[in-house]
Length: 380
Image (cartoon, rainbow, N blue to C red; front, side, top):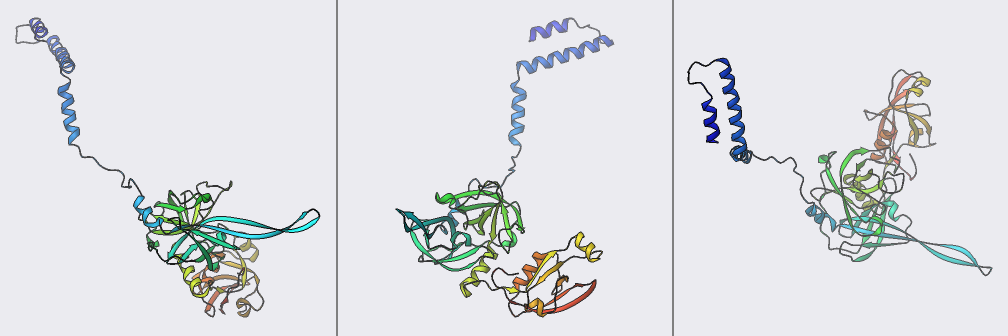
């Protein structure tokens, strides 16, 4: 390097009066020297970059835990496996003799111990069961008996002889948000307790066609046959729902699963334990949602509510003077959007409660009062 530098200096003029060509020459020499320095001593610049990089603070872009094991361990002991058996018989011919042959049909499901000796599960898991076998988290098996059911929400409460139970933490449902991480614990296909992970895809899902009263949590956590009745928990290990169903064209998981919110489920449990069933109000009407076609037929410009299509004879609505063709627009000063609003508002009322109904009859407003009766099964 010094030898090359001396050669370059010798070709430079001794005069201090530089001309333009010499200025250009000096610039070229500077570029050459800079390139040589980088080639011969690259570590001088690399060390400087390393030093600068090492001083830059790192920033975490994710706060998700590396494991949800603690959350699962808090909840898993309260999740059980359920085997419901139904015994039937069928006549078969053997050597021209009719023989009554017993048959056994079994369903696999899951359940959640909500308090000592009480298991919450789905109604469709245990309906018409002749025998129920509950397998606890530790492998111990006990018999289950149905204390009460609510087909309208697809829930059932079982009794088991098991007192050693760690209470399951209940989530505050007001804090549940779309995008929250959730874990589904259950017994898919009867293979044993299994945990899957997903997020909350939606809340307040109704009109799914699974039960009469719907307010589902939708999630993409994998739920398969056998998961029904199991727990849906949050990242803290608190239960937020009871896994109930999937939306699928194949019968297996396709990314859309539904769970009954735990606050709704516990309301059902409270009534089942107190009365053996859920007591709901009943108005005695059938109706359809208003749509532009109905509005045109009825000669209405703009209205929102439910068009009554049928009234049960001697029911609360009939006694209050309601008739087919009437439009319900408000109940107790609350605007009615659709039939789901009417169903939920009436069901939440107690038998004997008096409600105020406002609506439209032959393009004229009206208001009446009705006394709710107790809702019979399979009624509206």
